[in-house]
Each structure stands twice: as C-alpha cells, then as structure tokens.
Length: 151
Image (tube, rainbow, N blue to C red):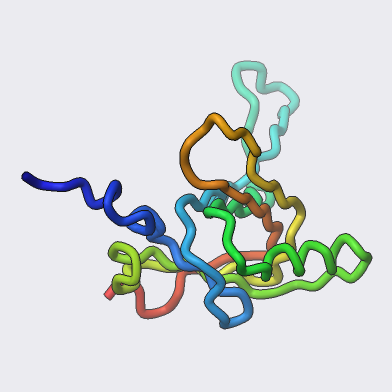
C-alpha cells in the first residue's frame, strides 16, 4: 500500500528555501508576490474620440509574502523588530525552488534591498490541527533570476 509522502514527512511541502544576506533561514511552504507589472498611463488625444491611448509607465511589483511553520529561528522576528525601532535595515533575500525538501535547486530569484513591512503570527485556535504558520511581508527595490538556473 502506497503512503502519501505529505502525510508521513511533515517537511515535504517546504520546497522553497530562503536565504537572507547569504545565510539560509528556513524552508517555506508558500511564497507569493513574485510579480512584475508595467503600469500604463491613459492619454486622451484631442480629436481622437474612439479610444484612449495607453502609454507605458513605470514597472511595479507586489511585496514578497513568505509563509512557514513557526520555528525557533528568529531571523525575521529580529529583523522586523529592528525596522520597527526606527532602523531601516535593507537586506538581500534569495528564494530558491527546490526539488522536494532538501533537494536540488531548480530555480531562484534574488530580491535586492528588501526590508520587512509586516509580520503575522499564527492564529492560536486549539481546535484546529496542523502547524502554526507565521507570515512575513517584504518590500524590495528590484528582483532578478539567479544566474545559472535552471540547471
């Protein structure tokens, strides 16, 4: 009888590794906000009544949102406490997609000049089963793919 790996290995779903300033922090179950969008500026040309021109504007991106099970690692907690105390500390964050927990890196992105804007702790409800999840939201200046990936 085959067993479901996700049920037997609690870390099987943590396929995203995050490094902060070159140091591995943890595996994450969910990463969101890897988005780039070219904003457009509407321009109404005099005498043209059948449409509005859409001119290219600036590139924008969403904040990076990372979710993981609550662990003893306090890197993000300490970082957001530093920022909340008035010292904006920007760091480089690397997210790599792994081939399973502790597997080979398949793809990755580097987020330059990142800093935390929000930390959310787990909902503490004793009737729910599962892992306590923390979430960290990061603003950043720009992102790029890591060179040499995928293999």
